[in-house]
Image (tube, rainbow, N blue to C red; front, side):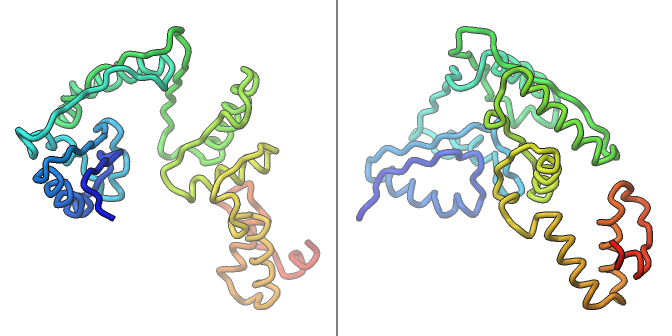
Length: 239
């Protein structure tokens, strides 16, 4: 099997190492008179923890000068009109900041293909030290609000930076009778009930393990994370 034409999608999430592997293939294809397609959007470069380098896409035209053609798509067929309008304002504002000028200088305004003015965005700044339980309660409140407006749970998605955060949210929502589906939530060892039982079994085997005992106490007194009541052996036996 010979592959002489390549299409690379989501190129803004490509790392330097990946490009070192892709580039010779593209060069060989071009030298044989073949066409290739690279698709990407610098504004969507969100995977920098994977070593993605947005500058690869940013500098692509210059790298293949005389051998490339840039086609900018100015119409958004997926998002609602108000979402597109918000993004135009948001990235237009970032262009005024020195840290973002270089990254977004080629970011063109989008037009929405949707005829009506639907779509809604709400931003809320949360203090870094705000209590985790308050944040979880806010998430639950917004879910209730969406349901009141006629949205089904299957229409709602919650995005997080780390899997651990997703597990915490999933656990909290399940405790409040909100059905959820997530990769993390399907893992049995992420169940707080399972974690408690494992901790209890460890304690029954060795009640001198102080670290495990403290963790067990935190399960028994979950209302206050900053104060853990120390239970006696007799109290735990009764529980």
